[in-house]
Structures are given as structure tokens and as C-alpha cells.
Image 1 (cartoon, one colour):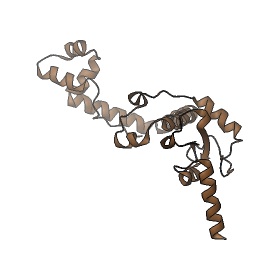
Image 2 (cartoon, rainbow, N blue to C red; image 1 turned 120 degrees about the vertical axis):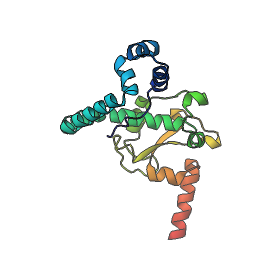
Image 3 (cartoon, rainbow, N blue to C red; image 1 turned 60 degrees about the horizontal axis):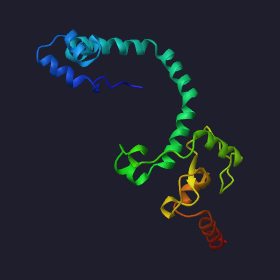
Image 4 (cartoon, rainbow, N blue to C red; image 1 turned 60 degrees about the vertical axis):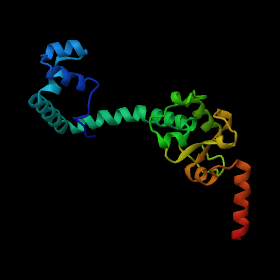
Length: 195
């Protein structure tokens, strides 16, 4: 993964202002509450270039080692993070989120009403299968399944685990804003029409 070395830290602007005002690295570090190296990094372009070059060379030399560490981390935390995103996305108002990515659950005044463990229990209770199509799903393959509101939120449904079911991605897209019974009726009409 490539690093963005120019991304600002929370100190950058303040450090640059203090340097312009004539402070040295130690004074800046003391005033800002950062290390001397951080203040020097943002003020001294030669020093910054040296650090960036050294970091890139290290990454190049140790590509395999870094890759092993990252893959080990993702194996351990990847599923947990992916399941958390599923729970989070189930709760967040997607219409608000799509227009403003900084909208969080806290800003919407929403608390998570269930946990990752609840999702795992639900997955087990459904036998690892889609609630509507009976398609076999794998918990670790979080891109192939979705959490669905049985009664859509736009129709008065809540975010509780009792209003939640696990569907294949395709089934959830097809069901869209319908209740289960409405979706099943629609499927029957389609089958009847196509015979």
C-alpha cells in the first residue's frame, strides 16, 4: 500500500506557522506537543526527503516481510472489521450517508442495537443460508451476503436483530423495499408469467 507522505498531520499547519515566526524545532515541539523530529519533518524539506527516501527503500527491501505482517493482521482482524461494517451499514441511514460521508451513527443519534456476535448467531440460526433463496453462504465471504430489514425502515421497520435477516447479495437487491411476503408474491407472479 503506497503512503501519502504529504498528507497533513494535525500539527503541520501550526508547526509551519511557528517556524515562520522564527521558532526553532525544540521550541515548536514544546509549544505544539509533538516530537522534535515531527517539527523538523514539516519544516526541513531536505530532512523530509531523506526520511521519505529511507522509508521507501526499507519498504522495497522488506516487501515480503511487510506483506506477511499485513496479511497476518488482515486475517486476524479482517473478518471482525467486515462484520462490524455490516452491522454499522444496517443501522446508518444510507440516504444521508451517500450525500455526506461524514455522517456517523453518533451524528444521527443512533446506537447499535446488536453486535457482531448477534450476527454470527443469526448466521448460525439460518444454517449459513440465505433466508429467501436457501443459497449456501460463507460468513467470511462478507461480499456475497447482506443484512436485510425484513420490514424495511421506510415502512416502519426498526434496526433490531429480530427485524434482521441474512440474504444473498442478489436476493437483497431484488427484494429492495418490499416485505418478505410482498417479495414472495412478486416472485410467484414472475414464475407464473414465464411458464
